[in-house]
Image (cartoon, rainbow, N blue to C red; front, side, top):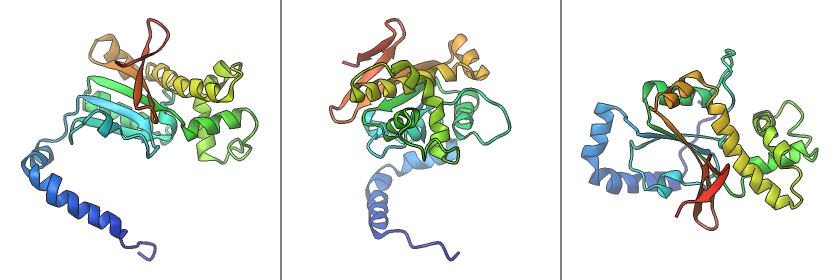
Amino acid sequence: MEYARKLPGYLVNRFRGWQATSYAENKSWFRHLAQEGQHPRSMLIACCDSRVHVTSMFGADPGEFFIHRNIANLVPPYSPDGDHHGTSAAVEYAVTALKVAHLLIVGHSNCGGVRGCHDMCAGKAPELASGSSFVGNWMEILRPGYDRTKEIEDAEARITAMEREAVKISLENLMTFPFVRNAVEDERLTLHGLWHNIGEGTLDVYDPDVGGFVPVT
């Protein structure tokens, strides 16, 4: 294929280093995973942002988490319309096939997708509102979050509030999936909303009893 290129050298070197250390030291575990399949206890839905290293945050080993990443860690509402739904497919597989016990939405600070949604909703990003932008169309999921926070005067505080709304809206939308709702009601699945401050290294969890986020201490 003419468009194919050699793998960048730094990736080749890193792979060889991993193969010679992490893989070599845990070869039996990797072979066990290959032969026995995956049995993760939790699914994590996180942002594509390269700064959000969820496996490192939770000290995860291979095979422990089923991870799906998308722009701004959003879950759309249940919509079986025949279109392509990558996030919905990942949720379905995790809940119905892998039967994970926990599903976590992991939001974060300084999210570019959320900032883009804010600017789009405020009329400052016409390229996202054009209807031809994949990012803009995806971020429409978060528009209710903009409506809930637009009265906050400080711009940065408003965007931080929207980042947390992205987590809350995703939790709300998860409950529109019949197989998720049934699993939650049958106490086979728990849902969790998290917000990670990248610079401070802190983690907040959504507490439905107080209607907001509280620090994990």
